[in-house]
Length: 622
Ligand SMILES: C[S@@+](CC[C@H](N)C(=O)[O-])C[C@H]1O[C@@H](n2cnc3c(N)ncnc32)[C@H](O)[C@@H]1O
Image (cartoon, rainbow, N blue to C red; front, side, top):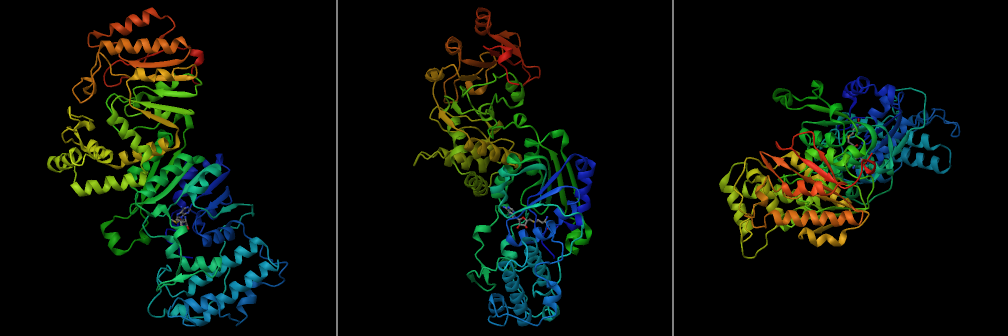
């Protein structure tokens, strides 16, 4: 059967990825998560146990036929159903006859005779099933064969979203009932087939290889194939409109919607319990290569990432051939262990700890129930903690508001807002006028909305993405040299999902107010402004209080309090920099022999970062 996005033509390319990475030697199972006509699963069924899934029931039926093929003997039935139907002229004036042929409607999907034959066959298959004359495998195989036979005589141009105005000569020839062609006749094993939205299934399946071939355009398969779905289900649905379509709202795929596809794709890759992931996509797709790559590299081992871009000429129409724009993509990656996955804040926050994350994680205690990110800023550290309770604190309430927004606003709504705002103001990198217009609206005093979503867009287009305010808390950062792109989108999507899944309390207090959280099972991570390398956010001139020696002393006293109750802390800082030294910290370290200073070996922004902790090596993470 012709099926949009069918992968028959690129099976060899997929096979190459499998063989080159020796997956055929290492793996037992293969999950075709958007199986369509199960071309891919069928091709590999002699090598792996196949798990197939698709949102459409017609696809479920076809996958069953190809992956759990019956022996073709129809022992209980006692006749060969293909001979039986092909030698009979019986028709039934059923649902298809009445609604999709001139037999009872204006619609010209089938000629009267073929529509009646379809009804008769479909009804008979159901009767045999009810009388237990056929097995489940035989049942699916017979329905799939009917769908296959129908596709040869349907008066459509490939899909069922519309029928042709005039009768195609094929459509008026009598339909022959033909069996589904099985191209891979290997020993039949019990393969598994699901009929679910992948987003509802992904957390409940596991295995070796995950193959993703999502829809890549805005066309909904449920609309394009509504009639085959109805014949497969044979549930006499309510239908409407010129094409007599069933209600497909429950089957609408988020993978065909801009913004939603980004959110769902990220989630699938994040939640997949598979060692290897292969993705098929196309240049015509809604998601960009950059977006897909960013997602795969977040959850996969970067060094295993592979990408192939190719064209298969046979499929191209003349226009596409000329402009050469249509390419197929195959991505491959091996998944990381969960503890190696890092999330990064979509705020490019000064002093952000993203590049040091592995180092920080390696030096954290083994176990704690509560994690306090005392100077959380962009929340690069807190977001990576797997604990029962997370506390975000930053005295800069504007930053806190931004981070909290990623948790509280629906990610799709935020995406739409960002896209619409960029369009509304015609924002572009380095375009001062457009930027200033948007900034004026943000700062507008009447009514003082100060929408954090607008602030976020401004930050993206602002100078070095700084979050700067004047003393009346008007955002005053000038325009910058960057803007929104797909890498940032990937950060927004992964970060927002992560925040939504965690139990986080957001606070914007002076750090001493968090004394009430000091306890034995609480771990405090402290990344204060550094006394000797002032960032622009701690110079006291940005609408917020600065950082000085008095604060530094208050902080070390706070940390001592944690130590007293056998709580644990980690302090990030810089003790020596360009001839300056932080005497307070030096002295404090000398006075507390149980505090350990650990140097970060890499260079973060050209300075020597250290951490100071109050626990032993034995308490470290594995
Ligand atoms: C590109 S086609 C797959 C083609 C298939 N590889 C083949 O060779 O026939 C994409 C499939 O994804 C299915 N689909 C769309 N959204 C889905 C979802 N959320 N979960 C599972 N399947 C979905 C569609 O019904 C369609 O069959």
